[in-house]
Amino acid sequence: MDAAHEDLSGPAIRHLFVRAHQIHHQPDYARLAEISVSHIYNLRRSDAYRKLRVHVQHTQATKVSIGERRLPNPNGRPGYLRVDTVHQGSHDGRPGVFHINAVDAVTQFEVVGCVEAISEHFILPVLEAMLHQFPFRIRGFHCDNGSEFINYSVKAMLGNLLAEFTKSRAYRTTDNALVEGKNGSVIRKLIGYGPIAAEHAEAFQKFYTATLNPYLNFHRPCGYATLVEGKRGRIRRVYKHDDYRTPLEKFRSLPDWRKALKPGITPAFLDQLATVQTDLAAAQKMHRALIALLTKCRTVR
Image (cartoon, rainbow, N blue to C red):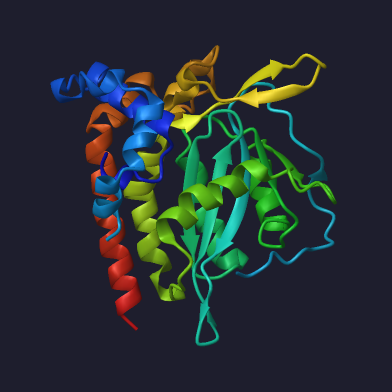
């Protein structure tokens, strides 16, 4: 288990072992592909593993009547995004960078961006570049009530894409829960909470586009819940071992997924992106680039 995979759950780690053996044909993973999830957790709790491994600003609401206040209904189709911003904190009274996180509600395809300030001048170009990184057509855009997204410029951009524009309802804290969970499990887990000066936003944007986003979508497994009805009729979510797969694998499992692809994006092109390197190599590359970036940003003043 490599340091770059430490943020993953046991079932996700096991899925990576299976992929390494069956897809990338690495014989060293033949036995690991058969390991149980419980044994992975036992290994993580061992003294040897622990010895090796031990080495905010609130959203400003707006009253502008833009976007429909409702929960989107993807109906099993990709392209309905949940979007949120994450502030990296302030240092000496100066605000740090802002991360923009966009997650598809069905496939969990995730694209992260970075801007130096919350304003249309900085957000619009980055947001447009982020939407281009999704391989499927954008059908919906859902956010909270922050003014960084609830404005006429974003509305016009989504109108050109023929995408519906929705926003979270009052007193419904779970409306944007998917992307908020990713804020913690991806951005905070990797970047942390320490302040990062705004002038480093471009460097983070390049890192996200070139390294992190391909790793998240082609090499990092996510959990997809199975809905199970209990004895009293209550529906609960169960995450089975076989329900872990990468966002690309989930996308390819959808019916008529080829019809959802953007013009110019082919299945062969996606396969090439996913197999150009192994999952472990992609995680190690991402981890090295992240450490170098954080070291530079937090030592240069």
